[in-house]
Image (tube, rainbow, N blue to C red; front, side, top):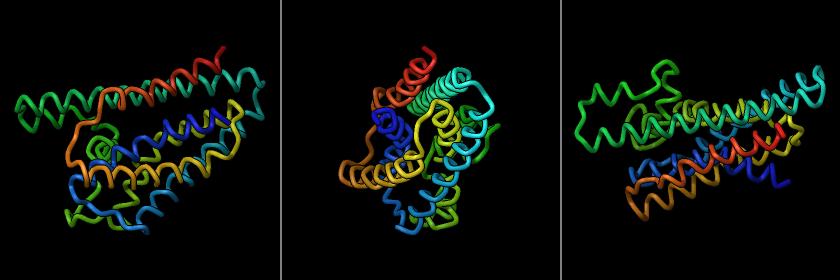
Length: 211
């Protein structure tokens, strides 16, 4: 049970960061749009867990557990890479770097979805200050990237289907919490601990599954 709770929190932290960004920018995200974000996440994790279950049935339990642990470690390293790139961009921005230099710090090969993760306001394509349903679809896909790998890993290591419910719900709750905090506190940088802790947890969980 603790594994489900910890994994849910680690996968939902991006929602808090998105909410903080929207809160201080005064960008609203209606309930309908939040529902679309949750649905995207639910769909992604359901598909990946189904695939993981199928793979697990075709593999020895020890091999499935090891593969699941490896996927969790890779996911944690991926999140750390994104965090490092964002910290680098922020440092360059403070130094007054040229916009083209900042743009090169994005993982352009993965396109819009990663740009939304690095700059959540990018989802507000029409700059209306409201995340419309079609824009929420983009946001949902971006936030659901991690859940694809996590769902596969969770299924391989034997975690239950509870994640299908807890991750979308946790994501929506943290988005709303982030918006509230962002509106009250204004713009505030995310602490380095907040950026490092979730991927570190994923890596630790992966290592434990390999033991």
